[in-house]
Image (cartoon, rainbow, N blue to C red):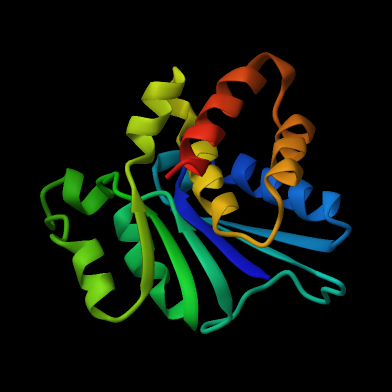
Amino acid sequence: MNIMIVGVGGQGTLLASRILGAAAMRAGKQVKLSEVHGMSQRGGSVVTYVKYGDRVDSPVIEKGEADMIIAFEELEAYRSLPYLKKDGVMIVNTQKTNPMPVITGAMSYPENITKTIEEKGINIITCDALELAKQAGNIKAVNVALIGVMAKNSPLSKEIWEGALVDAVPAKFLELNQKAFALGYEQ
């Protein structure tokens, strides 16, 4: 499986990739991760490649190779489209995070991004992960709510994912993240 996790700095993409890696390892798979940081401290793009299988030689995912893309933000979903396989799945958080050109007024945020993606024939699953995180008790749990959505649409069992949460999430945040995961899984 070739999975890309895309978002902006501060959204928790790295924890999401650690949970995904832990799940694959629990399933007995070989796992490789590669993180690409833009200006992540300033809200720039962050991309994580996660590959798992019986044998994985390289952590990098080339254009047209991603089985699944998990997008923490709509514009990042659109930017990552060239990496998705023809029959791949894209999970998109409907949250919008304005990039610097929009904040400064130099550009406007594109409208109808998810509709544009759907019109391209992409298999897209949208969810309001921010609302799910609020229901779980903390807006910072957006990442784990999205992992829950992904887990529901992955070949790995729910029990493997639940164990991966225990492996990857600090104990003091585990209950909150378990709630966020469950809410995402129910989508």
